[in-house]
Amino acid sequence: MNEQTAGHRDPRDELPEHLPALRAFAISLTRNVSVADDLVQDTIVKAWTNFDKFTVGTNLRAWLFTILRNTFYSDKRKNRREVPDPEGAHAASLFVKPDHDGRMAFTEFSAAFDKLTPEHREVLILVGASGFSYEDAAQMMGVAVGTVKSRANRARARLAELLHLDNGEQMFSGVDGATMAVMSRSGMNAA
Image (tube, rainbow, N blue to C red):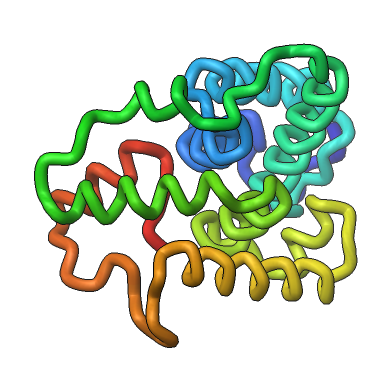
């Protein structure tokens, strides 16, 4: 590992802090909790064995997200012959049926989010839900910053269209704290 500078913790000690965000990103990519957990585990193993390539003082979360993303797409290329879940029947079975307005709104959001292209879901998770800058997301995705901004704008517009939102209308306005907690536990943030 690169020599540590004063004031920086060993990045291996920081790994647990990034697990929830990695898991949420993995769920958004895979749309399957079990597969997402396996993807996070593979990411941690790869990061642990390659910490000598990490530069202390740089963005560990971005480095981990890049490993996770690359692992996901590598696995996807390897497993093209697997049966997909395009209707989301299996993924839908992982959620509790809605029993109040907030959960119904989230169910509508989740269904609309699933209709987005993988590129649009990815960019919204990175810059919207995970809070990465356009520059960090561009580096992780291996594209230009302008491409990230364009994809994010198109993804937001498409999501608003799928949800039949008026210009400027918020999907989760008026949703209580308990509902937001349910949404957070499901791996999605209401951005």
